[in-house]
Length: 585
Image 1 (cartoon, one colour):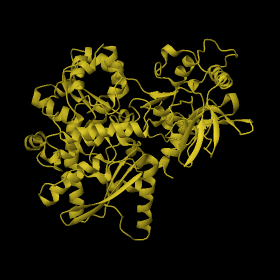
Image 2 (cartoon, rainbow, N blue to C red):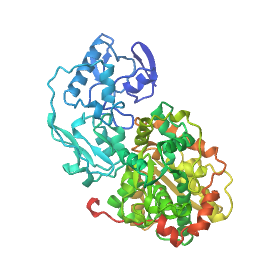
Image 3 (cartoon, rainbow, N blue to C red):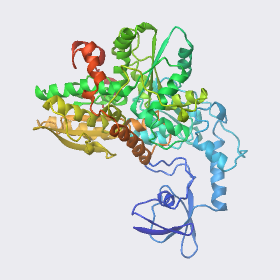
Image 4 (tube, helix red, strand yellow):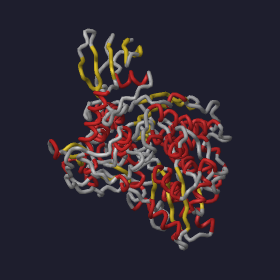
């Protein structure tokens, strides 16, 4: 442990802790813009400057985000000199930044705007420099506005060092430097996998999700459209933050009510189709294991950013990829292919809206012709993020936290505890284990809590005993971690050895969907843990906790799909993948 003083207060921290981290322990907030706890610090912005006072009174200026604590340090984080320096840094940034805050997508949630207000900046004493850089809206999920970029580097760090995608980089030098896609091609033609982590980490309005709320408002007002909505597991534990509640606060039943108040005619829950996914994917796993298929391990396919990444960089794993669609796309197919007929609604008049924590879902819904499996146009017409939904609720003047609880519509609404787990890393695996045990043994699992796959470890491994049939599993989240798993399998193949694992879950974002690119801003590991805890709470209080026990799932198979893996199930609920040679490496 290291002992030091910060503003006269004694602090004890672990070896390797930085001044920023030490200050937090004594509730001192040092202003930052480039720093983010998810990313390696690189002291770009200069706002976190502090004084390191030596015993002889000599003062050395340093940047708190990269300065490691040392024994007997005497740190000053705030005084008149430091405030003057920070004000100057902010004024310099603002001199090269547009001042159209009212039209900015981050208005009200912009870190630069907040700091400018805290420092009382009313005027900028420097000449305003604008580079007139064009907006790049070529990507189906996210939009890049380089004119608003403050060159903090967060998006570059998360794209390159966390996600290992390398779609975004700095181009140019000095005042002419800018953030852009690799080689300055349009972002839609870059290696981008649409995960949105760049947008989630950007402190200003330089990268943001494609806003499609107006299209949904238009559909809600169209008397010729029957609007149907679904929302993902992670939305119910993220949305409340937009209304002042703590992370992880469950709003499931209030959200059903809010969506009806917005004007949606039918409200379903993606948790139901998560249960459906487990039946299809679990059956696929059991079949491969019992037939001793060479296409082992089976890899989950719920995450569209991971699908995009796999097709670009690991297309040799396509035979290992589950053909099961994501819960979003399964629900879309069931809404237009099953529910519409059952409800007597013309499927061509159904306007299917999906609320997701993920920007890549905007791309997935129109990914290819397999997303039109119900024969009535796109199975899912449009996708909104959690943030977009929050804006719509606020625009409509709905006090969501004080709405009476309501239930989802049937038959595509009721869900089990397993379905809600899909929002957290390890959740798909845990849900799959619960039902795979039954599918193999025809017995129910005693303790359904499979805790080895919970938590934020980069790669989690475990062994599952299916009553004598043992399978090894791996769970990877945060795109950069999956390479460790897949490269290990590649090395085994080269050596003529079997895969170390038989079943692998992948989620592109750290923590899983609870911290997806479309969730409320500011996710940290603490917030990810709190949001996941909300899903585990939802699971624990569910009367039914295994997907195969959901009576509505059983009824859907009996009335419509026949059996998991049937011909009709494959037509509606499964897909195919294609190697994208342009991005092989």
